[in-house]
Length: 342
Image (tube, rainbow, N blue to C red; front, side, top):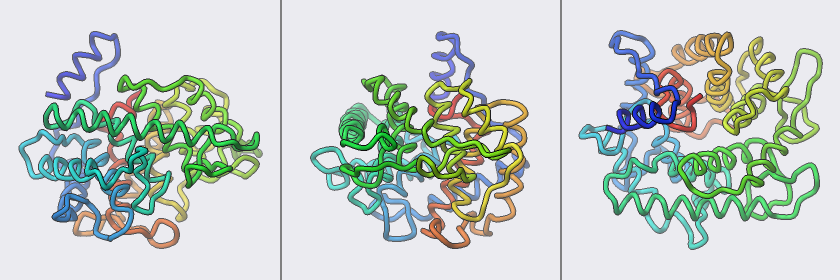
């Protein structure tokens, strides 16, 4: 029902309808996705959380919800996946997971996780199982967005204005935390929640300040005046396009560099997720190159139980995290979530 409704709305607004997934059940991507989905569902605890580790439960469960819905499952589905989504969404909406001010980062994920959970809830508007849950989602979204807007107003120096970092009152900013907040703001705006234009403009300006070009290397650094990496370049690429900056020179230069680049082992899954979605937005030849690189990079790494696992370092936070990011990378072919549409 949701897909048909979205397609009808797209037609009425003169927008391209969401592409439907390929029906070939032998397709290797479909099989990998199905195994990954099964792994996530199997990690659900009696509380409704989806995470095989006892850390960052709200943020990782939110990523799991995003991953499951990105490949076509919905909380209203009368399937095992639909039931898992219903339980996971109910878990996120428990009062103890969002403080009185609207903050979701109490699970240890701080503003990073707050941005992820707020983004997820904004994407889930319209997918609640009933009117009561739909109202809960909207209230949680509004409160979560308010936290993001207030945190952005913390006094900062010129190099950090418009961005966010790990604490609500941080006096500096970085690319990774900023992009999650900006994606949440854009998703909220798309869903009809009031978001001041100046807040998005300020975040876009911060991201552009983080752009550097050095020979063939061109992209966004983790902080201004720091050279780009594969992952930070990719996240800046997606964020600017989500904000409508398709023709920005920073977007063109970054996508050209990523066209000849490969993901690094550091932040591998994180970088590949932003790369897949950001390059898809650029259309050809970027989309085809990215699709092949993502497939070639991820399929050999999938374990027999359907999971993916980071090899170590900063991403070594469990199989559930790596699996959600892998599924979000492979979900480019489905285009179900509004935030990832061209």
